[in-house]
Amino acid sequence: MISALAEMSPKRLLQAADEAVLDGRRVEVRKLEVLLAWGDAFSGDPQDEPNAVPVRYGGPRLITLGGEGTPKVSDLALVEIAVARRESVFTTRRRAADAFDLRHRLPLVWAGLQALRCETWVGTKVAAMSRKLTAEQVVIVDVAVAEALDEAPARILEIAEAKIIEADPIAHAERIEANRARKGVWHSRPKPGESIEGDTAGIGSVVARIDEVDLEAHREFIEELAQALATHAGPPAEGEEPLSMDHWRAEAFAMLADPAAVLAFLRGETDQPVDEPTDEFDQPAEAPAPEAPATGPAAGPSAVVVVHVAEDPDTGALGPVARVEGLGPRLLSQVRDLLRRHANITITPVIDRLRTPHRRQDPHRAPHPGRRVPPRHRPLHQDRPATGPRPHDAI
Image 1 (cartoon, rainbow, N blue to C red):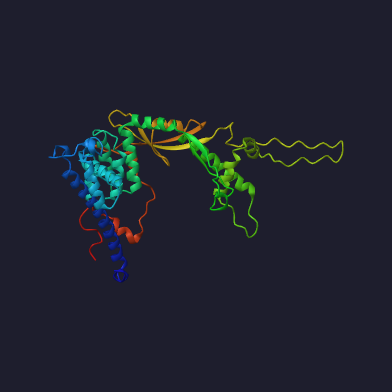
Image 2 (cartoon, rainbow, N blue to C red):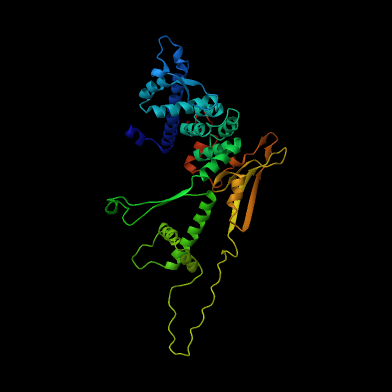
C-alpha cells in the first residue's frame, strides 16, 4: 500500500486524502446507526416479558439517556453492545445518548452527518451541549448548526454555544451565578520526595478560579508588567539566550505579592541610595517627581471591544446574546461586566441586519477574515458539493 501511494501524483494523493476523510466519517456514522438500531430493538419494557427478573433483584429496566423527547432503552442491553464495541458501558451510554439526541432532537444536524458534511464528533458534541434544552428550545440550535456544518469545527461549536445561550438565557445566567459561587485560589504544596525529581524543585503552582472579567483584567496587567520588566532588564549578555516572555510573566505574577514594589517600579522609582553629600553645605538635589503613566489610575485603562449583535428586523430590538471578538458568545450583561473596570471605553457595534427579505444574518456566523486556501488545494474547495463526486475526481 505504501509503495502504491509513493507512485501517485500529487493530485491523486489529494484525492486519496479526501477519500480517507470521508471514509472515516462514514464509519463513525455507521457506528451510530448500529447503536440506534440496537436501542430500537430494546426499547420495549423488559419487565413486560415473560419470567422477567424484577428490577429490585437486578432485572433490566428502561432508562432515558438523551434529552427531552428521546426514547428509552433497556439498561442491561447497553452492556452487551458495549462489549461488542470494545468500550466501557459508560462510554456506550454516552454515545447512545448522543445518537438519540441527534436523531430525535437535532434531525437537520443528523442528516448533515449522514451526508458526511463534517466530523461526527462535532455533531455528538453539539448533542451533548444542548441536552438540557427542551424539545422546543433545541430547534434553534438544530437550524443554526445544520447551516454551518461545512465550516470549521471550532466555528460550528461556537455557533452551537451561542444558540444554546440564546435558547435559554435564564439558565445560562444561573450557570454563571453558580460558577461564581465556587471561586477560589489554590497554591501547591510539595509532597515528600518531589523536590529531587521532575521539574518541581523550587517551583510552585497557583490555580485561580475567578470571574471572567477579573481574569481579563489580571491577564492584561500581567502582560503589561511583564513587558516593562523585560524592557527594564536590557539585552542579554553575549552568548546567552534571551529570557522568554513566559519567564517575565511569571516574574510579574510573583511581583504582585508586593504591591508597593509594583507601584514603585511602574513609577520609575529605584532602590539606589542617594549619594552622601561631600560637604556639609552640599545638599542632594531633589529628584524630579516621576510622571504618572499614561494608563495609570488618573487616566484610567482603555478598552476596545468589538461586539457582534443581532437586530430583529421587525422590532429593532437586540438579541440576548452578543459575540465578543476574542471571547465568543456572551450575554449582554456579561459584556457590561467586561467594561466595568474601564474609564475610557470605545465600543464598535457590528449590527447584522437582513441580507434577504426572509433570512436574518446571524452574528455568530460572521466569516473569518483572511482565510486563504493554497493554490494546490483550491480545486478541492471550489464548488465542492456535500455529496456525490468530488471536484477532483476526474483525473
